Amino acid sequence: MNKKQRKMMGFSTVVIIVFIISLSFLLTQKGKDIVNTEVNNYLHEISQQTSYKVTQRVETNFSYLATLSNSLAYLDESAYEAYLYDAYEGGAFEWIGTVDHKGMLKVKNHPLKDVSQLTCVAKAMHGQVSVSDKLLKIFDEKGAVYAVPYKGKDNNISAIVG
Image (cartoon, rainbow, N blue to C red; front, side):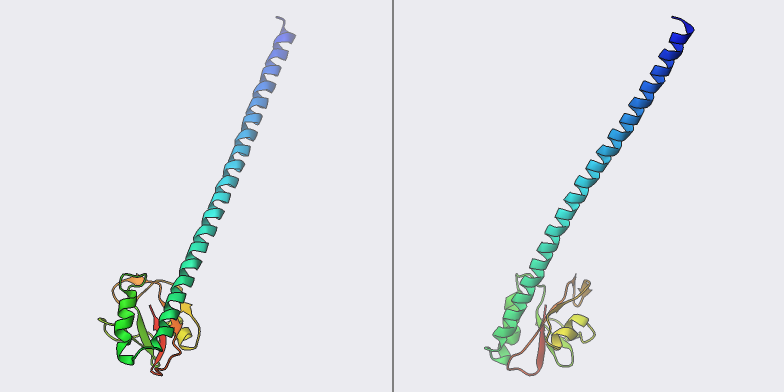
């Protein structure tokens, strides 16, 4: 092999190596793009499902408290505490109680608690359903606090909270 052929062979080898490296880089980038797209699609789907489940749970909890609030109108005032206690025992709520116009929360087997400063309670006292925007510790455990307005015969109660 003469010098010219060796140069051409060396040049061809370098071109082939550069081509293979470039092709490998492009394929790696394309693979990363495909993986990123799939991961993003998966995460988007998971977040949509989670959002739907959270929304569904919040609506269910509001509906449950609203039903309790409406039911109190048919009970004697002396039966409220026992009724609400029975309603949450074994259910989704750690406790359920009534809030008077001063913002005092009354829950069976718990001390009276001032919740007038909680935004969700204030909204319920003004006729809106609301849930706390962060987890709160009212009694023993932290959790989301739900509040619905009370529009029954007892004018001392302004909200049902759980």
